[in-house]
Image 1 (spheres, one colour):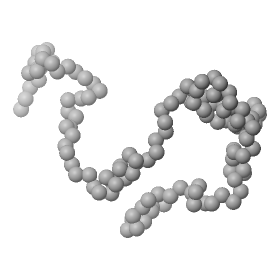
Image 2 (spheres, one colour; image 1 turned 90 degrees about the vertical axis):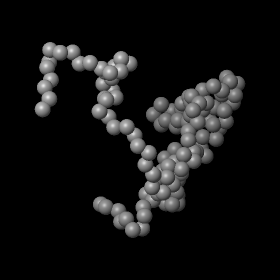
Image 3 (cartoon, helix red, strand yellow; image 1 turned 135 degrees about the vertical axis):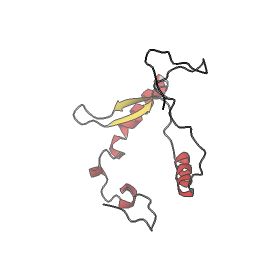
Image 4 (cartoon, one colour; image 1 turned 45 degrees about the horizontal axis):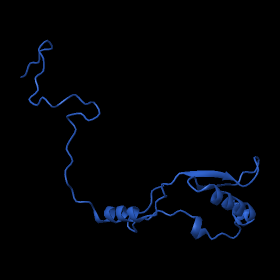
Length: 125
């Protein structure tokens, strides 16, 4: 049996330790465990996936205030290049698909989301 007195100060062996409430001392240390092959494959696939470019973008409305047709262009473009790109986009605004109505006959294989499941694991509804 152990007694703890409220009036006595708590001593620490290591003077460098300080109370850090974001990372409590009772938190378990990470142990190296083998990652299953399926998870490794998914992580590798995610790492190789195309990631968005980190450049700052500027939103340009090619339509009206009521019927917005917004595109994004690089904010770091020079003023002359930016002006020419906006003119080009406005000239060919009719070739872009702004909604699903603008894409009749779109192949469902392109727009349908699928989850990669193992054959032996049926999905649960």
